[in-house]
Image (cartoon, rainbow, N blue to C red; front, side, top):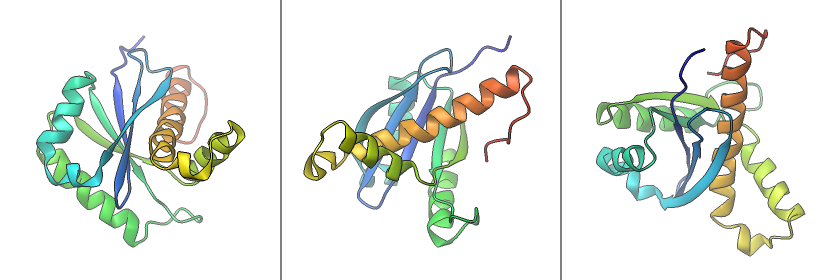
Length: 151
């Protein structure tokens, strides 16, 4: 059995970044906070998050188009990830984040959270949603199941 490392997930938006983290076993994703997108100007701030959550990997949500192609927004996110990776001592990976914000809004609405109250919460819940998919896919591969690999 491979030892799993805690994964820190970032859902990068124009104004906010949703942050989620896995448990040390790599089974459960938990939304933890929302930070200002200006944080991404400095890799040290992300390194502080990595240290705070004892993460061994940073997972960045990649906004692919519905047909799975990378458009301008995905290229912008990859550029941010590449810049961040230069200042981090852990690996940076990407995960398909299509529809994670829609799922997050739906879950919050079903939970009785008003549209105004959803602001910010959507971002960290979306990060937890794509992180959970990533964790599930990696666990399935470890268990020998035939699944589509994450990005």
